Image (tube, rainbow, N blue to C red; front, side, top):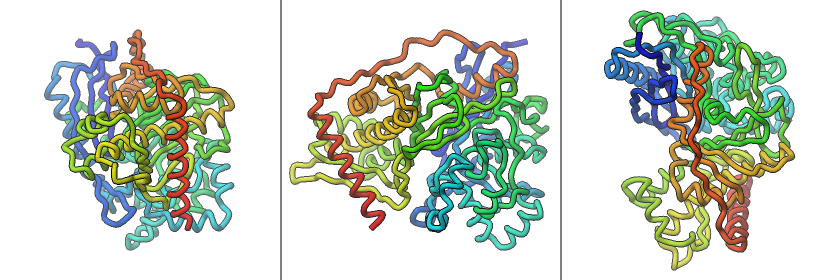
Length: 492
């Protein structure tokens, strides 16, 4: 028999990827497709659930055709988190577009809940502050916007789940409606103490519990691929479900408290494993990193940035450039941003500020400002946002964080990596991990299936701070002033 491989699906906001990963962590085959995001109203962001599933099925077919002789021992899924899908339990068809994590349609509802004094109880139960990023409030709004949907949901005729659950339902031909602890912990309907759905949170957000999936360990197995739904044989086990940022943390091997990684994609997630639940006092979230059948639940502390790498894509379009490589090349034409500060609150501000109503601003321009200064300020802003969250993590953990490990598409940018080192004053480590989220779920699945995937890792690329202190002080002062101005506008 040929060597076993894990089929890893990484379903992201802007790309869906499928990889065949061997035991030595080499990628035997990989395929990817770009995903579309729709913005039907100001503040709204949606994707087609059908397109997401069809893309995954098509990528699986491409891999099977490209590597017909490999033995696929198991399937593992990492997914964009907080994106919510509602579908008909009988037909399996979506009843609405997926409201993705960037969608802020629930901002007014979140404001009502905060004004009612419910935030402390919600945080105590879920670990998550009130913000449109989290889907609980959006689920209630979607049910009320679709005729008869709420009544049908209460009768168990409508299913609700994050992208992992939606893909699992389709892969099993509707036989399994489940999720894992990591994804459940991002819904704001999950109780971090009981490790199950919380009836009081469901009441607050007006979400029928009958809609929600069963919660299982991340590596516990979620059934088998149904006959005929994909190009896979029907005995392939669906071994792992895990949120993409959590999967990246697993791939980095950062299970010890005090070590932090940043996944820099459309948004950014900074996450640190913790010995138990940490109650943040600096604007961060308590979450479940992963759960294992043999080892139980791994807690984590996380800070989410709504627009990170997406800021570079936005500026690329704004400046009329062909791609983000051109944006970086333009940024490198000047030694600094010339006093320009870009606050990319294009979908509000996430951690540690949590200001959903904030809007993007560009400040500090003069007649001497050129497009290169705006380009550099954009990349600088990505680093500065990450620096704010990293400082919050260090404060919550009450310990110094000497280094930050990075991954994700934007992390491949050397200029950004150096700026991160400069603005955080810390060493930045960029391990040689091809597709960290997909690799993380592949590693977790391999472990659960008894396949040894532990190999030596090459020395990571290292970026140390080099910026003079007076320049750093000026940049941070301008940044904090600009962020304060964006927040004041949102509150004014």
